[in-house]
Length: 233
Image (cartoon, rainbow, N blue to C red):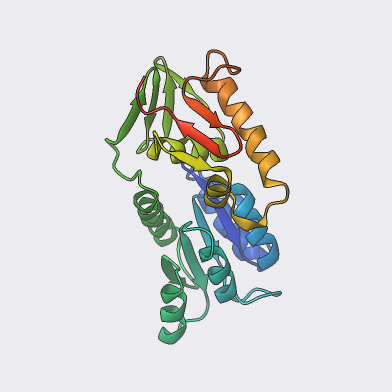
């Protein structure tokens, strides 16, 4: 079965991490674990997961600060999983940008339902929530709802980051997106040598989408500025 999405688990208690990972992997989600806030924020920026599961009681930083930090650069869905049950703490986390809040202990069915909801909200916030929304230019077709990319009818496999770049450009087809704008949307401020990473990903994207990567027809480079997705071909 296809991967349903990537979930980043920021949780310092090993037994809880293992329980969550096992539950999600059984349902065809990919999971990535972090034991500290610092590690989690780095992974969030580099992987751009579909959902972040965040414990508030982390050893190096309060989870509230993680929410603030992530929200400074991204609208990635954040689902708090915490033993803190006071309404004031829940309201603070939600007001600062968390998408939902689950109080420990919780069952796998509740967790999965909350994740599905968070992913739907994340898709809408990113501008590709409607399953019927399809972008087409020439032989390139992107189905945002199904997260499928096809070229001349053949499905193309893109990595998580590659898809985010292509989807962002398609949602702004005909407009130039600066390198900084793409980097901020996809990686945030925590990656080193972002321009190099963007160039590497773009080279891989073009090898997969273009008949002649040296003369691209779908994604054009505006030298010194950024990239533009062709609106009509």
